[in-house]
Length: 239
Image 1 (tube, helix red, strand yellow):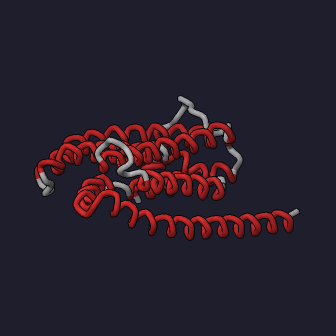
Image 2 (cartoon, one colour):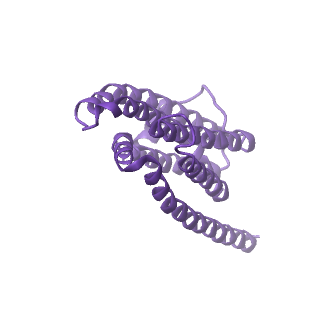
Image 3 (cartoon, helix red, strand yellow):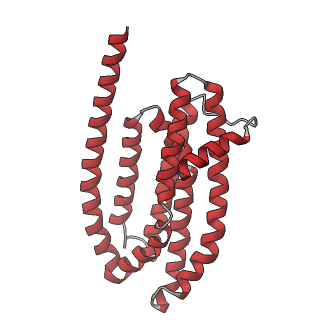
């Protein structure tokens, strides 16, 4: 039995590694093409403005990786111990944390971020309105990624890298599709692409939501959460 379990783990590690390698290769190729298509569609000026505005939001994207890794660690332990009740608690606490974090980030970016965009960035007057719309769409795309953290952590903890690779590929292909469609609609090109980016974030979040709530009954919300659970999740991620 021990030998069979060892063989199963080895096969899973190999298959996950192969899936992630194929994902990385495919996404690299698509992203290389996307840059060229996006630059052609937006033009040099709008491409630079878009990257500058979206870059404001990207200053906080490290939070996604940090919290995902931290939550995955606790999920993995509870799954290894087959403690479904603890998984309920951890998942619920994680949802509470990301919702509060999303609210705090909204307060910061809607005040400081908007002020910085309109005060310090050198943007032509005729592109300022579009830049503000792009900023809002980029920011709310980022908020969706924040709320998505517990679901991603669950996928990683269950070692379902095939789903992760699939969702990542769908995300990349949708963004590439919107880049190809720039200029085909009666809409500002920057705003169109930012809208497509936001739509893509909604689609990917929906896929994670369907996967987790459809196949992981242990990931349900509960009200019985001890304060130490929040402390442990935040202290580990902070460290």
